[in-house]
Length: 335
Image 1 (cartoon, one colour):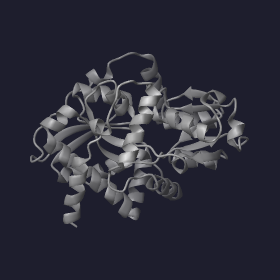
Image 2 (cartoon, helix red, strand yellow):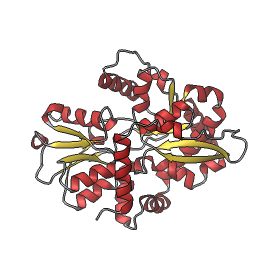
Image 3 (tube, helix red, strand yellow):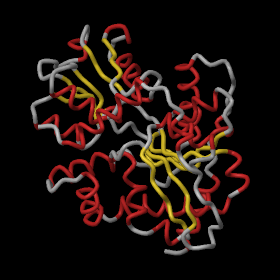
C-alpha cells in the first residue's frame, strides 16, 4: 500500500515535470555572517532524502556543523533545481552528481570541493523473468531523467555487457521511490535503485542483474559551490567541508550509532534492512572526500561525451579539493 507521503512525492514530481517555474527564485537568500559566529546560517540543497546523501544529514544530526559555528538548513531539491538556486545565490552548497560538471561545460563558474561517493551506489533490478543482459532486449528500464547520471551509467553498463542504448527502452521517471513503485507495479521491466529500495524490491522477488559499483566508477553526493562563494567566503567553505568530513569519518567508523541514525533517516524499524543499506552504502564511500586525478579526468570526459560538448574543461577548473585536503590534515592532528 502506498503511504500518503509517497503520493505527495509523486504529485510534486508531476508538478516539477509539467509546470515551468523558476523554483530557484522562490528560495530566499540565506543569511550569511561569519564562521566565527555561532549559528551562521547557510543553505544546503540536497535531492530527496536518499541514503546516498546520508553522511551530510548525519553530520548535522551529530552537531558537527554546529561545532564549526554553522547553522545549515537543508533544502530538498533536485540537482537541476538546486543548481539554479546555487547560481542565483539562494543556496551556498548543493549536493549533486554530474549536473555541476554539465553546467561547467556550458560556462558556469563552479567548484566541486567534496565527494562522498566514488562508486555508483545503484543496483539494476529487473523483472524476475529477466536473468541475463540479453534478456533485456526490447524491455523498458527507468532512470531519473535525460542526461542524468543514472542514464549515462545505464548506457555504459549496457555497453559493457553487449547491448546498445537502442536495445532497451529507456524511460525517465524521476526519483528512486517513483521508479521503485513503477517496478513493483510492473509498469517497467527494470530500474536502477539505491538502498533501501533495492532490498525492498529483492524482498518482493525482483532480480538483481548488477551492482554498478562492480563495473564502473563515478562521483556522487558531491558538494558544489560557486567560484565567487569560494573567493568571498573561504571561511564558510572551510568550516562546512571540515564538518562534512567529520560526518563521513563518523559514518564509516561508528557502525552501531550510524545504524540507529539510518533507521531514523529511512523511517524504518527493520534493523536488517538498515544493516543491508548501511553495508551497501559503505562500499561506495570515498576514504576522505577526495577522488583520484584519473577519476576527475574521466568524469569530465564522460560528461563532455554525453553532452556532445566542444568546450574544453580541465579537471582543475571544476574540482578543488584544497579545502578537503586541509581539513583532513587538521582532523588528523586533533585525533
